[in-house]
Length: 300
Ligand SMILES: Nc1ncnc2c1ncn2[C@@H]1O[C@H](COP(=O)(O)OP(=O)(O)OP(=O)(O)O)[C@@H](O)[C@H]1O
Ligand SMILES: NC(=O)c1ccc[n+]([C@@H]2O[C@H](COP(=O)(O)O)[C@@H](O)[C@H]2O)c1
Image 1 (cartoon, rainbow, N blue to C red):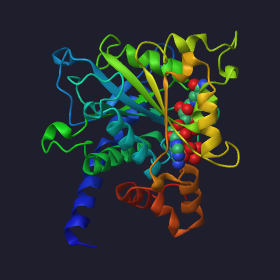
Image 2: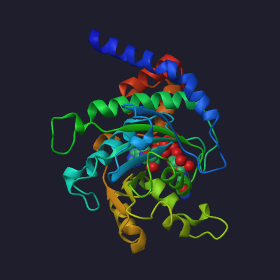
Image 3: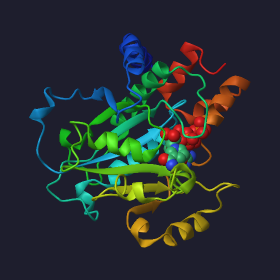
Image 4: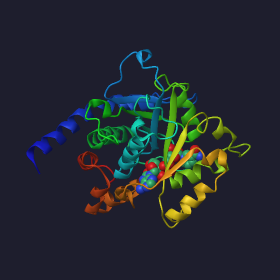
């Protein structure tokens, strides 16, 4: 490997490792009762105070995940979303004078279905920082502007809420994402769309009413990536399902096919690969994330 690349990677590790104690503190002081969502790191750093923020309309693409670990699938989903909602694309609902979309990588510290498991949350946040750096280095806007305006703002956040309706409400109450100025675009894989629309998650009445007043309100959107497999069916059947949804939902859903490198990539496959010693797991993650997993001895 090129000596300069090795030095760059070591620098990234040394830059991120000192952040671990502050990540630990942020996680332990996260409120679990009120609507709660904290930004723990921003690339580039956000101006303070946040009252000095632009008053322009904005779009935030949110990738909510357990990031255990962040994968190349997560990277491509984020890149495709940033490009899709770029004002150069004349996408419906994106004003030409709008700021470029920003990206929020959101760590869910409670899952709607799964019990907690290693790696520790501060390590996942560290790997999310490495993923953010990779996204910065890889991103190019739909028609190159050649200036720094093309570089997306990436924020890293944490929330204790397992359900999207509560994450969405928490985001709309955050000073960086005021609801009157911010359109939320939620990035989901097809498997997660099915669970989002399952009434079992909405007791006591088990209806989708709260979805319409939160995540699906205003100009918000859901960007769904097909994810064909034995359980969830083919590309074609996933498109068919999305077209058959009630109009009040389908008009909020954009469904696209992910980049080919996303096929078959999952955090579970990476964790299992590390544990079994199969070298192929490294293809599923960005270089910095792979280095972190090895150096910190995660998932063994
Ligand atoms: N290969 C993929 N294709 C399409 N969507 C994906 C893919 N990998 C992840 N996603 C989507 O990204 C979001 C966050 O991913 P998540 O943390 O659930 O990853 P995962 O790889 O499915 O994790 P795990 O294997 O631990 O269950 C989810 O909405 C998921 O559907
Ligand atoms: N109805 C819902 O809002 C709902 C259902 C299932 C999973 N989720 C969330 O989706 C995210 C991804 O979940 P998985 O890691 O299980 O794919 C997690 O934050 C999880 O809590 C939300």
